[in-house]
Image 1 (cartoon, rainbow, N blue to C red):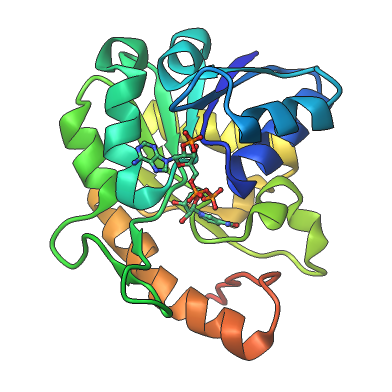
Image 2 (cartoon, protein in one colour):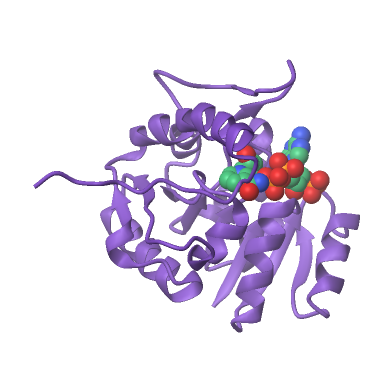
Length: 219
Ligand SMILES: NC(=O)c1ccc[n+]([C@@H]2O[C@H](COP(=O)([O-])OP(=O)(O)OC[C@H]3O[C@@H](n4cnc5c(N)ncnc54)[C@H](OP(=O)(O)O)[C@@H]3O)[C@@H](O)[C@H]2O)c1
């Protein structure tokens, strides 16, 4: 599959590396065509992946993963170009974290809106599925890193796109179908993004980013 990774940070690198390892064609996008971080990633995968601008990546990908800096994701997606997102699934991983006042971060948008919604509104023809934003990137690509089953929450307006993302997360990374919870339309990203306030504090207390939610249901 031809996959666009938008973002050259640790998330883009983790996802891109796993996807080339399992045989997909990946183009990692950045603000510049040949960013230093992109080159480092390409070297780390022995040239198996390609790098380019956000627009080149988005044009290339049959599916697009948004792993950009959340405070700047809309700008990055504008650079990717609405025409390159049209009709495609956009797995929206980034969180609208605001570190401008230090730790813990706040959110650039919350309560009555979310980054997932802002992106879906700005790019109405993209099929936005908010996913993977509630876990560390090492767990995204290897859920078996944790010793028990644990849950991933996704949401988005397009039911078919969510089914396809659920299938792909299983095929690519080994996420169990029953561990992926569809929380509903894209407004549910308010909850998964605001969860970051809890996630960051848990990270501090537990001393590791390797943890996740496990929902225990009543009968
Ligand atoms: N770290 C995790 O495990 C984890 C887990 C869940 C969710 N997330 C979320 O995933 C996202 C990516 O995190 P990260 O740490 O990998 O990377 P990051 O440092 O937050 O973002 C890197 C990317 O953002 C782009 N960017 C930065 N400023 C920009 C601007 N003004 N305009 C356009 N693009 C801009 C960069 O472009 P250049 O390539 O041009 O520099 C780069 O590609 C974040 O939203 C984070 O909250 C992270």
